[in-house]
Image (cartoon, rainbow, N blue to C red; front, side, top):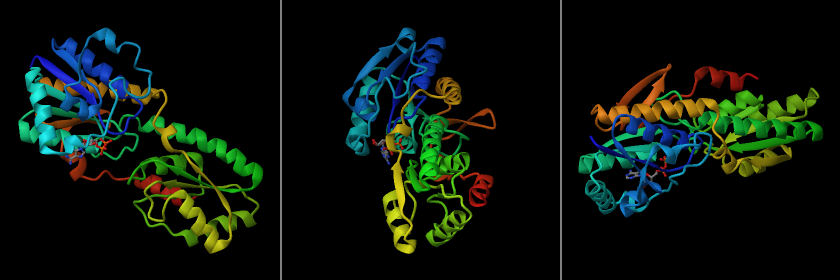
Length: 320
Ligand code: ADP
């Protein structure tokens, strides 16, 4: 192996830059050339490649977003798109590819590997933490802290005005962010896609608290909850009980910002491990960290196996 490429794909997450940096530096360190692919899989199809030297990745470890840009690529969903991508890699004599992204990006990478025999290593980077095979994904902790900071501020207002607030956090179809943030912020209830949502029970709880004089109430809702989005839930609660609420949707602020130390360090370790996996011939795989150890799994495990929520956090979120 002489030359590898790296790209970031799907939703961006804080720490992607730290991972690009580690991947490039480890590649150079092992005597390889490193190519950056801009704009995810679209860049692979368009041959949007740039050679990366050590200095190209200096002073980025602390920056959110991704210097390589990210994209969702419709074209890569087609066999023709993936053939064009593989041809570009071959024409540029690229022997292996590091894909930094979420499970969607891993699916695409796995197809590229299966159909065209390209060696691919996936590095789990998504704020949602919904990838099996690693305790944490790159960006999750930073996103949780961003959301926590915002909810602490909402709590001040909720307390000042004796109000019920419904705060929606990201997570797509997973409740990892909501559960972590709900417990961390002392929310009165956490509504997540993985568990049934009983709005009547939540209303009873809020009413009880109000009767005890504890009139600031916060419900944290994951965006994929079965009861609907935060606005729909607010309307349903008002219909059931007459309780009025204010809605805050945190949205994309959770994606940006400077990565926390835990995400920088995880990204650095996994970028390093991804290059080693490629050079050592691990084949199509993903790298992760479990209990402090670097682990390597088949790429398909990332979506065929389902990561579980922490059962203790589930209990904590229900018993406050
Ligand atoms: P994430 O990687 O954050 O989960 P997406 O689910 O949007 O983000 O996936 C990123 C990109 O990966 C998609 O835009 C598409 O190009 C590619 N991709 C996702 N699923 C597949 C698939 N089943 N086959 C081929 N490519 C895929």
